[in-house]
Length: 369
Image (cartoon, rainbow, N blue to C red; front, top):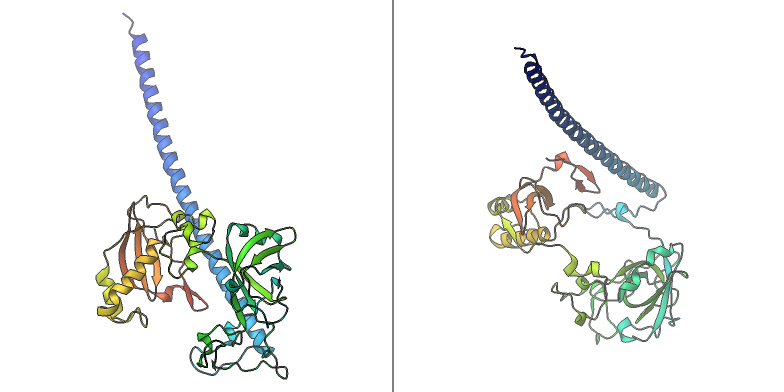
């Protein structure tokens, strides 16, 4: 009797099984190899990005130092009194005009002291050397801030030099009371910068014009910036947007559209208290008894708004071990974002020696898994 047929079939089946196992093993090895390569490439890309950011930070710092050196050489540095924190030279600001105001008020006399006192007054901001797309979307707001200079002041020049502003003045409607200059809305200031709230009527992109009303600006006023007026600009705003506020904003600005967690769970309150005790939150929070709760509340309010990067903001941590880090005063806050709350994991003194500084601000480049 010939058993060669079944034996051949059994051998073929065994070879097939061995081949399948080898193919499966090869597939597993290939998968893990590719995964390891991808992880390696990802780490290399992250390292490259970190190096690039560090180089950009150093370049930006060097450029600023070069500008300061040039200004000092040209005699525009502003000088220093020698007192700590009183060196104004590196913080002087040169602004570029982005436009000017066209209004019916050709002189200071007759210009409303507040725009809301003349709601029917019309005008517009004519943009210059600014692209028309910069005002795209402004018509979605009902109001905006105009940042300008009091160009019609009578105290700007005296023998080629700016007059020294008075430290105390008498407000026009103060019945003779004399108060500090910064406690008033006087146009005569150390820096003749003004801030005016106006109503947005319409936008003409083709003409690069922002039509406004309820304005208190003299014709020809130089404009340096325009910022939308939002609910948070209202001092009594409670976080609930409604039509009774009397303002209009885009949907993406409304509080209901923002991601926030109502609950912040603390597992590091004792660590925070120790940091306050050790002076790591001086001079703003220096007393453990009086300042622990305010400091804890301030940190909770920041974390509740999800301070993570744009790509991660609003997302829930998939892995409970994923931690994020935030600097507050001189402490480092470690936190996790979970399904319905934020968990504060630890509060430790920040090690600024390992970070790069730009203008006195530590740029944290520490990559953590």
